[in-house]
Image 1 (cartoon, rainbow, N blue to C red):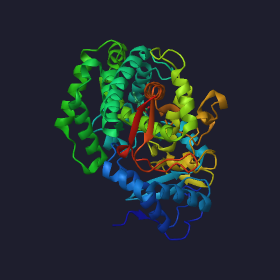
Image 2 (image 1 turned 90 degrees about the vertical axis):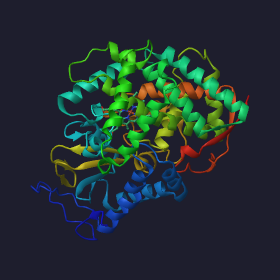
Image 3 (image 1 turned 120 degrees about the horizontal axis):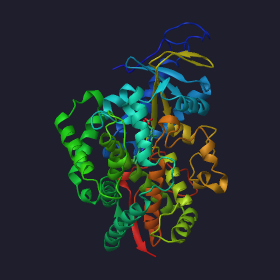
Image 4 (image 1 turned 120 degrees about the vertical axis):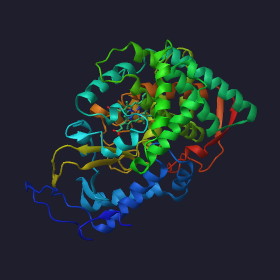
Length: 466
Ligand code: HEM
């Protein structure tokens, strides 16, 4: 099966700036190179699972170093073709790989017009479980939903109004998790994941949802269907059951939960306030992966582990705290292992670039593993550098357009602060009184490059109280 099409094996047609070519004038790479991008960049992302990660495929991607090949492939293409977006046709659809941080910044800033986040790929996948989610909405609906979501999630605030209850929930669940780990002497992904989902359901929907594993299982099944996008039929009955369950919690909102904030935040008709909740449940899953990967790095890097413990043990543990170093650890975890490896935008008009134009309907793809690690503007590459996100360095990473773990601009993640608060509070509770040894492979070492993939499903730790 031929996935890519290109005119020749040599670098493509010369550009003629200003020409009125409806197909665009930026030169595509040769057919072999285009096929290489599909094989080394797109396939591992699709195989690993875009909407929900697949355990067996993640293990394969880690074992074969597939992600590293993708990063190397993009580096070679940038060296050969320069920084301009690189057009590719994949199964009849026009894509452009964004290789330059300044271009990435432009695409994210000029969202949603002319770069719409509601690409066809995302609409067909996410509609499986969040048909009215802001990410796949357009026009006035997007504006209204985005305003509502920002208000409920308190996007600009490092400490959300529900921070006190959230701290209590996280610490309670962490204590139970650690009790189990002390008994067995180990902590594996399975136990962590179960505790994580209890936290997420309590924070988002309230304590009544704590043990509602059916809700998480329904979401999981819908996400699996979403992985296959249009190839999978809509699971309408399951979707209705899942959405009805979410709405039933929203209809009896518990104080201190996000559902309560949803109930008391007004919004214009058509916003579908409770219909925004499925995305939050789905996206909190990524934060669990980021937490456990950060723990793996701290378990193997004594110097940052020491600083993390100092921060965790300073101050009142039950009082909400900003924990800047642990937030930096969470951000580094997502920089090194982006949970959105391809950030996509679809152009609604022809766009002009230094080397030529690209037509309306082009899907711009920011391949974050390359931007975060290999792009010359990403100074820390394969090492763990949490301080680049802290005041100590003037938050240098924040000003770097190559580093977009939570995307940025008008469709950047409105949950970033809430996520960083949740993750840093949990990491603090885990490291303040316990020591971790990474018991799974691959081993991480301060002197070696951090591997391009870290299969979170396989992570296991030996745990000892301090
Ligand atoms: C580690 C955890 C998370 C990461 C790395 C992350 C990252 C991202 C990224 C990269 C995007 C842009 C996606 C795109 O353009 O296709 C995004 C969008 C979004 N995120 Fe997050 N996210 C996380 C967790 C959360 C959580 C927990 C929530 C809610 C509580 C949330 C709410 C949203 C929403 C509503 C959007 C859509 C924004 C829009 O279209 O305007 N995210 N996130």
